[in-house]
Image (cartoon, rainbow, N blue to C red; front, side, top):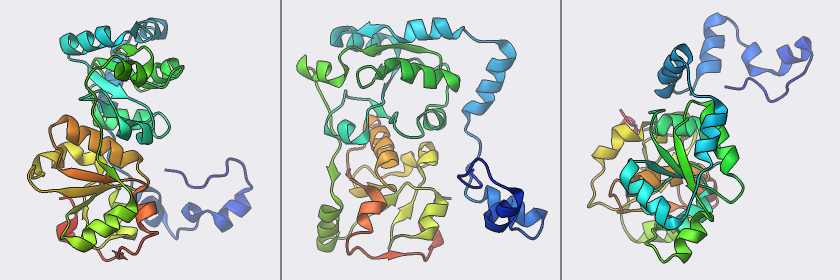
Length: 281
C-alpha cells in the first residue's frame, strides 16, 4: 500500500503532508497503513516453495511460452492439456467476443497480482490470448510471480479464432444509462465486486458487496435462476468476475460498463450507509 505517490521528498515536508506519518502512535500508524489491505494471495506460499526448491530458467520458460498455435492447434491443445485459457486483452474488447471458457485478466491493470489471486496454482498450464506483439511481455510478467507453465499463445490473437469460424462467446455488458432505466422498471439484485473499503465509502443503495478477491468463496452461493447486475469501479475487475462466472456456467447477469464511476454520473441513488447483511461474511 502506497503511503504517498512521491518518491523523493524532505522528511520535514513528509511529516506535514503524509497521512502515514501523521499518526499519534504506533497502533494508529499500523491501522492507517494496513486499512483495506487484503490477506496475502494464496500463491505466495507456492512462490516460497519455488524459491527453496528452484525453478526453470527464464529462457526455457520464455521459449515454451512463445510457441504460436493456429486456431486448430490452440483448440486441440486446450482440450488435451487441461490448460486455462487466459485472455489478457482489455475488458472492452473481451466483452465483445472471446474464446469460450476464457478468463479475462487485462494486461493493462494489476495483471500479475490478480492472476496470483484468482488462478492461485503456479503449476496450472496456461494458454494465452494477447494483443499481437504482447506475448513476450505477458509471459515475462507471469513468470515474475511464479507462473512458468505457459504452453503458448493463439497466433493472430482473437481475430484469427473468429475468422476461422469457430464458436465465440460474449458478455452481456450494458451502459450505466441502460442499467438506470432497467432498475427503474423492476426490482434488481446488484453485486459490487470492489474491495470492502471502496464499498464502505460509497455504493449503490441495496447493492451487495462481494469482492472479486473472494469470488471462489461466494460464487457457489449465486442462484443461477436469478438475474443480477455486476459492477466494480471502472470495469476491469467486473469483467474478470464476469468471465469467471460465465466459464462456470452462470449467464444470468448483466455487467455494467464503466462501473461505479459511470453509475455515479446517473441518477441512481448511492449511499455510505453499510448494512451488514449486504457484506460478504
